[in-house]
Structures are given as structure tokens and as C-alpha cells.
Amino acid sequence: EDKVVQSPLSLVVHEGDTVTLNCSYEVTNFRSLLWYKQEKKAPTFLFMLTSSGIEKKSGRLSSILDKKELSSILNITATQTGDSAIYLCAVGGATNKLIFGTGTLLAVQP
Amino acid sequence: ETGVTQTPRHLVMGMTNKKSLKCEQHLGHNAMYWYKQSAKKPLELMFVYNFKEQTENNSVPSRFSPECPNSSHLFLHLHTLQPEDSALYLCASSQETSGGSYEQYFGPGTRLTVT
Image (cartoon, rainbow over all chains, first blue to last red; front, side, top):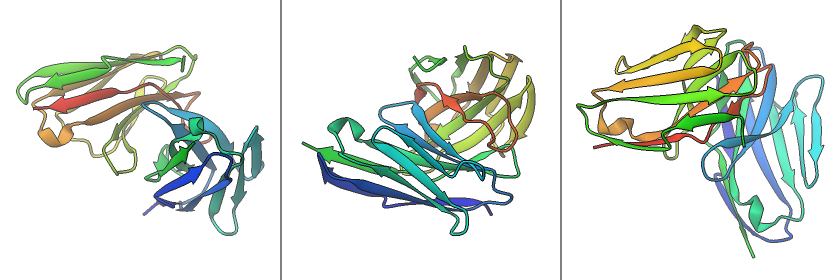
């Protein structure tokens, strides 16, 4: 059965810290791994990683895909209170589905 | 502005009521999705439509009935729901399906409470 596991489940840091969120997966015929940020309601798209694009960066956020280890990390440097959110990892495989993890709840304290 | 809108944003209904959730996407996409998000659980895919055709029904009870009249609109008709159906219902769209080759964009969701 396809599954996506995220860790840690929750994390509390102070502004300015650097955080690393983890996502591991077991998905048949892997195609892509996506990161989303969910603040209040709608998850907003951050990155999509594929075999042809294993590293993505946008401002203070960056992500790397390790196909050998079947995992990905999401790094946030110089965290701000506005980074507080649930970060969701999802993986697309052979089916027309995205398999989601339970998310990591990040709280950034002033 | 996410490009995907949902109405209503909040809904309280009794177990004998019939209501509908609406989703509209303004992104020119061809695939639309319904997800259920319950506390401390992963997003659960319910239905997938690609070019107006239902391509996925993830073992969803018949008290949930989707409708996709065109590629821009998606409905979820609700009837005789149970309290455990209370959750955030999210709509999403993507260029098309194909196993996660395209990123999905989400609407703000409808917070449903069944009393």
C-alpha cells in the first residue's frame, strides 16, 4: 500500500532558526513529490520535485529529493512567524492520485 | 486569490438535510478533485474528474454524490450524513491527471459540521 510519512509531527522554533522537515514515501512508480503550506484553509503549492528536478529553491525555502532514500527534505532558513503553518508532503505515483502525509505543524515563536 | 473558489465556507447541517458544496476553478484546468481533511489525518482523496469524466471514486459512501457539469465546476451533493462526516472539504484542480505529474491547486475549503 502506498504511503507517505512526515516527521516530525510538530515543531516549535524561534524566529531566525533554520528548520528541516522530512518526508519519506513508499509509492508504486514514483512520478513526483510535492510540498504544500497550509496556514488556515487552502494548502498552497510550494514545490514539485521529479526525477528531472530534484532540487528547488524559492527565497528562504528549499527542497531536495533523494530518490535513492525515497525521501525529501524541506528547509526553511531564517524562519519568521509567518512561516507558522502545517507543511504537507504529497507523492504522485502510478495512479491518478496524490498520496498525502499527515503534515508537520511548525510554530515559529517571536 | 487561489484561482479555486468554494462555497459555502461554513455549513452546519442535520443528519436528515440535503445540501450541496460548490467548487469553481478559474485556471483553465481539466481535472478537479474532492478531498476530505479530518483532524490529525492525511488528506483523503474522495473523487477525481478528468475532462468531466469521473476517474476515481475512492470507496466513498453513497451519501456523498459528486457532479461535474463542465471542467470549471464541481459539486458535492450531501444527504443523510453522519456526525463523523464533519470535516474540512477541499476542492482542487490541476491541468489534468496523470499520477501527480501536475501540481494541484486548492480552494479554501468548506468547514462542514453535521449535528
